[in-house]
Image (cartoon, rainbow over all chains, first blue to last red; front, top):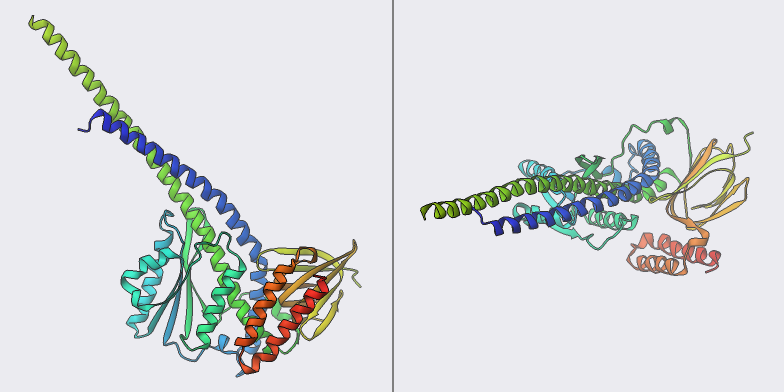
Length: 291
Length: 132
């Protein structure tokens, strides 16, 4: 049975924990709104880009002149997995769900006898993958001092990927991130970025016949790296919003649990206080009766 | 003939303009062009330069770097990798971009040298045009 003093200390510590989780929840809520706005603002660009790229890819893709970024190397032996996670923890299952998806994929590929390379973005994913996959790590991109996710960050990552691709380090690159659906639901997603793939559902533009200046091939060669950067950027933004959403939910739960715990501890505290008083009274009364 | 057309200027980070424009002057990779309503459908890449939008209210200038323009009869949309209103461009930003581009010239493979050099020249021309 803990003493009264212990209980009191315990209640005090849980109370301050609750204050912290409450504050974290509110901070996450504010950051989530900003992250969502950023994701929203990036959407028109990504959508147009995707539409144009898919119509271009459809018209050039079949020919021999198709750039390597689109056509691929012709092999799929070496896979690069780009695992995008958060720099910080305390956001529920956010990091683990991405890591789990990446791990399953990596194991599948290894079973098929493929070569796997892993590039991590964000510290948490690296830590979780280190135990099983440390020997496959090729690089790590640290975004911990990035305050606001900008297009430059995405461009940096995309450049790095394309550079590695050009040097024949891998055949297929896939990015792993959480797609933001709502505050309580984030969907771990894998998306192939190299060779570039574009959703073919943007068919509305296909009916117009465009003139191209310079030629279609040149435009495609110019736009493909940008398309990759845009996909990475979208993933980064979705991830940022998901992270804050996940943290908000996790901290909301933590706050509620702390409240429950305080209630329970307070009842226990009052009971033992009552018991101590009763005990003291019994001692006094039985002492008086003995006289 | 329609008097105006829908014009959108978007960068990856935000939508800079979405207006009814009378004409849009676009710095295309193969030369400048002006898009007006009922232009034939065209897709062109951009070189760094100044994009001018003429609306009923007046003219707006934007500095755009990289990306492409998609023009159709009903409107034009420009997707620029970097775009900002002319007044917001700072000399230091331009210098940083020029320095980056210059560094890339050294790295570029032989067949890409010309393109890399052209980028530097275009950026310098843009800086001069902005009066920085």
